[in-house]
Image (cartoon, rainbow, N blue to C red; front, side, top):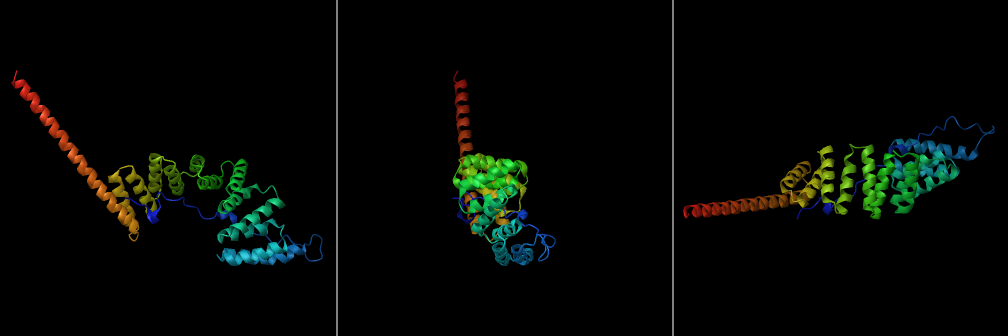
Length: 296
C-alpha cells in the first residue's frame, strides 16, 4: 500500500516559522532622563542595560541567552511594553510558549490598544492547546485587520487541532486569497480536506502545492499519495518518481513508488484484458450477424 513520508497518512499540517514582526527594535538611548532629573525611572534604568544586551544577543541568534536577559529586564520593569515584546520574541524562538503568553498578557494589561499583537498572542495559546482562547484572540485580530494573513493561517491551524474541518478549510481559503503563491497553505488545506473526506479537493490542493514548489519532495510524495488513492496510478508513479529523485535517502518514497508501479501495471493489464474481452465479444457478435444474413 502507498505510504507518505514518516508514515503520515495524510500528512499533518506544516507550520511557518515565527513571524519576523516579533523582533521589536528597542530605542533605549533617547527616552531616559539622567538620574535626579524629572521623569527619571529607576526601574527602567535598571532594566534597560539588560534589554539592550538581550537585543544584541537576539540579533546574533543567541535566543536562549537573549530570553534570560529580557527576563531580568521585565523583572526590573514589568510594565515596559518593549521589554515584554522583546521577551515574547526571544521566547518564541526558544519555543517557551508559556513565557510568550505571559508577556503578551502583560502587554494587554498595560496597553489594551495593542491589538497588533493579538495574532501572536493567539499563536502562543495555540501551542499551549488553549484553543478556545486562541480562537477568541485571533478573531479579535481579524476584527482589527480583516486582511491579516497570519491570523487566518493560525486560526486555520487552531480549527484543525480542534477537529473543526469545515472552519479550518474556510480559514485556509481566506489565507490563500491573501497569499495565493504560498505552497504550504495548499499542502495544509489538502490535509484537512483529506480528513474531511474530500479526496478530490485534497488532490487538487496537493497538486497546486507541488506545482508551486516542484523541488519539494514532501509535496511530490503527498501528490503521489493522493493520486494513488484516487486510482490515478500513472500520475502516482510520476509523482513518487520525482519525490525519489529529490530525496534518494527516503525509503518510504521508494516503497511507495514500487507500490504505485505494481498498481499501474495491474491496472494496465486489466485494461488490456477488458479490451480483448470487448474485442472478442464484438467479433462474436459480428460473426453471428454475418451467419444470420447468410441464412436468409
